[in-house]
Length: 208
Image 1 (tube, one colour):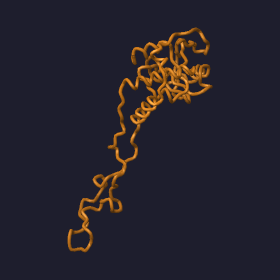
Image 2 (image 1 turned 30 degrees about the horizontal axis):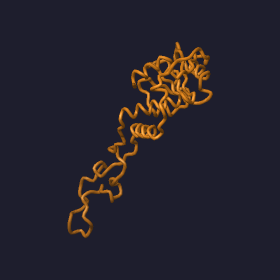
Image 3 (image 1 turned 90 degrees about the horizontal axis):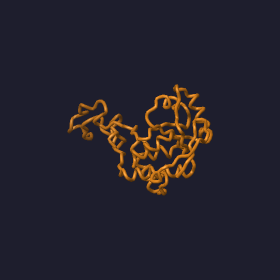
Image 4 (image 1 turned 90 degrees about the vertical axis):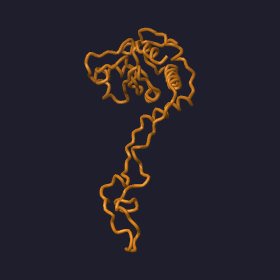
């Protein structure tokens, strides 16, 4: 499949050929959905946490003797049925939400999303993407000529570029990612995908 190649001014300067085994894969929404669920589960962070009776402060001494008082037997004032006691069956950090999915399924779903973006003309290929200084204003001007006025976008970098990363992080609806770290969830989170032409080879070498 051939796609247009643009410069940083948003001008068409030529065409490039995309490998069909990556950018012409038939969509399977069930597979993509399954991969997205796994990636969302693996990114999930546990924030809710309560203390059990073993973690609550105090309760080391038996409140009263075992027999002869007429009251119920109690071993600690930090029992869950007491005020100030531990919580039974509350949320803890021990719960694991991580899931696994085969590498072949992950890569197939990645190719499907890239193919769908290409088919819908949401993949923008540049001859190069360079800025001399990490200035948000400079980066915003480049992105406005390419996609920013139309929607959100993910910039795929050949390698870690500190200038582009710093200049992009304060621009709304925009993010950066390295080609070797591409995943389905990131691609689906943004409308447009922007990449320099050299990234295509990195994607091919990494995922095929």
